[in-house]
Length: 202
Image (cartoon, rainbow, N blue to C red):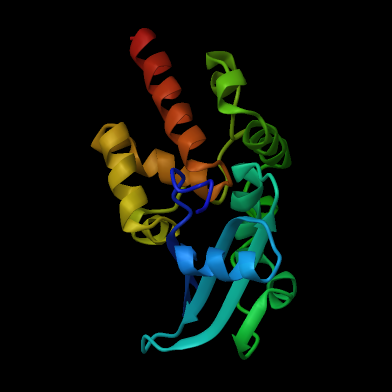
């Protein structure tokens, strides 16, 4: 019943001692929302799981009408980075104050602004030059992050999709761009553009 079944919002993200499990709701949740007089286009359920595997908090976010999927990704990022913001969506359990570092604390402000612009653009309107111009402006805190840290920012399905889209050596580059805040599809496109540029300069 969701209009966004073709987009995978699912992910498991480690935040402090908790893992936040983000999943799109099943059809029964959409049916219940319709019965309540709502017109949902996307419903996300989020569970916070402790190190023992126990669900300690639950959250729900419902969008009605039209939704740009970029807004859903922005919500997930803010949810993970801002404990006060996430409390308004909590339906069960105790408040969890653990937070991911905010993108602005990890990357150059110019890079963060460029990423925001790319994320807000429709994919079909983005050109080769848009990705070529996307720079980190020097090394940032993400540049030295290793796979054991970055692998937790994507679901298993997303990791398989990334591995199927780029060379194995470029997977970590995609994850680093995602860690900086770039949406997965854009991160894959960015790394492909960088690889093409590098190959052409040899």
